[in-house]
Image (cartoon, rainbow, N blue to C red; front, top):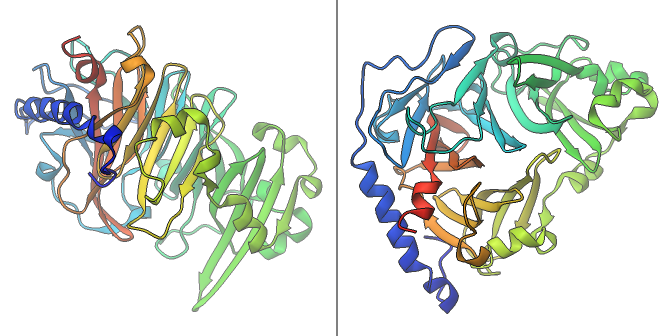
Length: 408
């Protein structure tokens, strides 16, 4: 494990780590694969139908061009041609709202993960489902997720290098989309022109949004176009106390063009030294000399914050962290996982101190990504990774109740 050091505190966790890892892998051997399962319906509302009845502590799933299917392991999922990450079905972001988890699945839709126990009669994650909308997801790339009025929202963008279906119509490009989990419907909240100063709109006509971030109640957007070996990039800042109220403001006063320096300054990672105490306590085992950056989100928070610990030693680790009133969690790309607190309706573990363990080992050139707990299930994305290209991708679901509380 790359985050290991030789300190006594960390060494004391090795026995627990090995015990939990052994439990995961032993259960993994009992997983059976059904090549004839029909997990995905062809309509817009595709829901998981379980192919496995054996009680296990985790399950693997991979994305297809129409949905997702179960597999015995990522290595046994069908091979996929490596393509730019913007053009492949893969989890691009996630959020947690009142305990329920939502993921954006590029080119497909929203993966909904209800806050339920892992001890379901039909198996782990049996209530997980995917809601698709080809009109939104096929022509654009799914970006970040946000929480707006207790509903999940996400942005779409266009990659000017890899996207073959670029649309330059200023008024018709959807940017910010709301998903209603009660009706399983999508609604466009804001379009491209809502993030462009009206008195400078002509400068943005042939540019596509390629980045959108919500920081301190302000939207920071970058627009880009690459034609004839010439790249144009413009940046804007849009003011609003509440994201959904942007349209009630005058475009000229709500949005203005900014320079690259201001955009970078406002969107660069925040030093980990000023991260919330709960996440610092969670990752106390990681030496201060280990460089990493981690995306952190609290339950029902409006957006994700990126924290970084910068040093000149070693490779930079990438991780994803979340917290609720019950617990805190962080998962790094190699599967190293940190947990503190308790699961719903269960007792606090180790007086709230960090428990470290590892997820099942992935094949070479595979990494773990966005990670959230819904109920007692841990959802973690995975993908085959080669620089800017992605091959296979999917997610693993782990029954944390069985892993963390086994034998109590």
